[in-house]
Length: 135
Image (cartoon, rainbow, N blue to C red; front, side):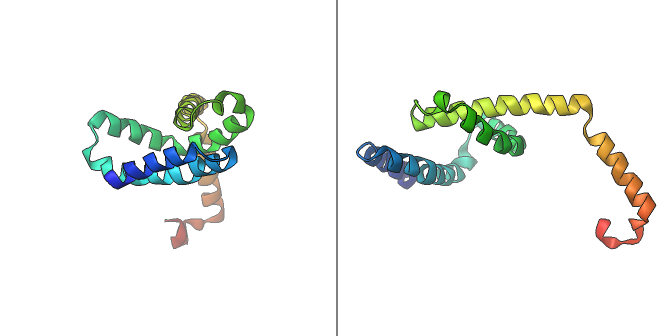
């Protein structure tokens, strides 16, 4: 665990003396990888509330993944003037709030019911119940 923290510190100190383009490549390439390794090592000793926060973000990760590219493309002026960690936290918070709103909207309109009815209709019509692949 100490090795990961030291490597993050070295990357940060080293990146302050290089070109901006190379610095962003390191921040978006190596830093998240090292953070993932660090979190993997620390996951067993996390307090319950932090573990619950990470689990909740994981439940919404598919929507966050789809949204964050749109946010980065449209709101670069809000994200890039800040430090890398601050930008990542702002992006995560905005993406999470939008994913909560989209999840609420999907539950409100019951988006899964028409697809379930269509699937039931197609399975009955084609008599796919005999095929073991669909079981």
